[in-house]
Amino acid sequence: MPKHKFAVGQEVTFGPRICDGYPGTLAKILSQVSAKKWRGTEPEYVIVYGRQGEAGDIKKRVTEDQLSRDYWEKNIKGSYTDHQLVKMGHYGCFLTSACVVAMGLPDNCFELMTLRRFRDTYVANLCGGRGEIAEYYKKAPLLVKAISVRGNDPKETYRQIYNTIVAPCVRLVSGGLFAEAYALYKQKFLELQTRFL
Image 1: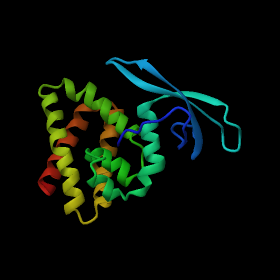
Image 2: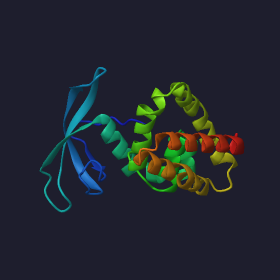
Image 3: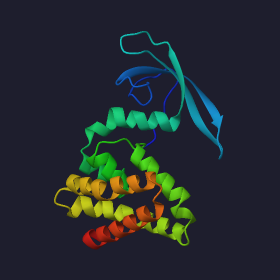
């Protein structure tokens, strides 16, 4: 997802993520501030918008990343097909692709947030866990590309990945069965590599 620069005074149509569930809401950039983060600073903006049919009087402070993501999804993403998005590299993770491309879920959906926490709090602390994570991020983009190029129906493939990997692993993690979730993920990851790589 490319970053977009926003100018003070600019009026932009944002989606429900930014504007509290109101889709297609026109917002105006009031000002830019710099918020201290763990590493350096990240630009933030103060925007004003109104609920549909109402005057714009709701102020909100959001980061540049949040604005860029919402702007991309609302104004640009829809002009591309799912296959084009995969080829453009916006889904470099096959688990993300399974959720976003096949199931229509957002990048911060419950499933992906659960799996990311599982990665960071359980897998990363296993003996050799960080190596496993590095291997995933090395192989995952290759799998995404192979599914897009070689798969007969990429969306159906991602739907199968969601049903056989994402959903079962999330259920296991949510139930505290971390070792079982890890074993299932490893088995299915190997099967995908054998099939596509």
